[in-house]
Length: 220
Image (cartoon, rainbow, N blue to C red; front, top):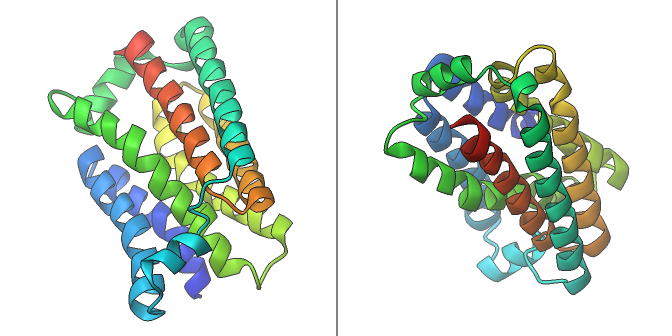
């Protein structure tokens, strides 16, 4: 039951913030609060690990080949999203509906710059630390590596449905979850192969930069 809650907790936070409260700032507080507090309580407070041991167990160490892979995959994600946005944004999005939805979610005005910074700086670190750092460590003796990568990728993709479905036009909104799942699988594989999370974080930062570039270039 505890593991089910760990898998579903981030999705519940997104649901409460977006679907119930219709606020991106509130969603960020709930979602990133969960991603930060749960590993902190478990590994530092309950297990009484040192910060150094916690960072090591979650893979927060530099591995040069892993960093190269992170940069290469991240650049590929970035270019793919910008090119897709350039050629297909009129099919993927209804710009007027999207703008209305973002205003409804409080993703507007002076808050936008700060929310974008959160997505570019905080989001990649906390998502990777939670899914492919903390949960990998939590599950490593309970599941095979393939099952662990698959499950973390599935549940990582799950809460993206809650934001992707309203943002994209039908039927592309359902199709857009596939790249999220594939990215999770790639980042999980990188983490497993290298025992380092840093390449996945770099790749994730570049991927999120691609998403924000599409928004700023073609949708704002």
